[in-house]
Image (cartoon, rainbow, N blue to C red; front, side, top):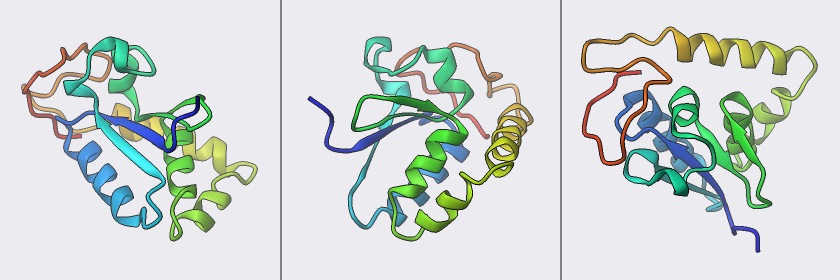
Length: 133
């Protein structure tokens, strides 16, 4: 049975991830999105391997598909009244390709300090390290 909402799995120890989810929740007037902090979930509860969660925001859609990174953000925006039109533009030829490249560059080029592991580094459930992405 499909889930009633799309669910975003975010890195709760990441400032950028938390802000992104907070913004999406603020835009989600119709209650179409759920968000789950991946750092407190077990590996079996995640839609993709944990290292993939740390590379980009994954989403499990109501129909069971899994999207990661730019496609997940685009779909999340499409679920909101304010983000619907920008999300449609993000499907335009060339925009989608550029959006994926920009998303990947931002994810790879985040400012890090000693307390912020690189993307792809495994973060165990319940870990309390702070990240600034």
